[in-house]
Length: 117
Image 1 (cartoon, helix red, strand yellow):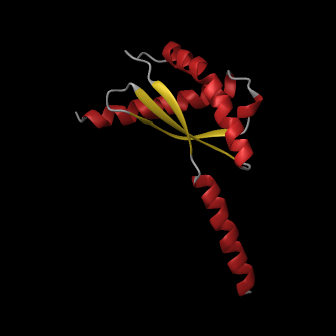
Image 2 (cartoon, helix red, strand yellow):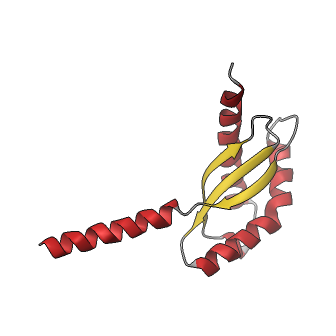
Image 3 (tube, one colour):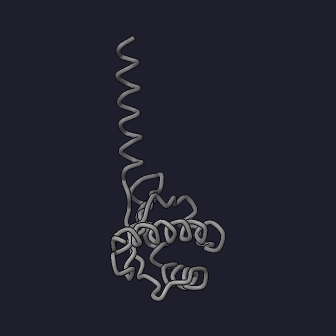
């Protein structure tokens, strides 16, 4: 079996668990509008990058980043409790701007379509 294959499988599960934990267990108002968009786990399963998105401006992104950083140890503890892993990965939250870029392109296409008519 390839080393990366397990990392992808476990990384997906970790990302889903983080999303559930944020939704059900974390009560920080700074992360209320956060959406988990993906996850990557290192091949040794010791480090996880969790990608998130939040609608709003740069201030909302910074606020969400601070809230996620604050809740990181709680989330790690919850993952350790919910999943049977030898090592609970260190979590790093990374802002994913792809939703924002997608919204920007949709607005551009809508404007082009309205100018075309």
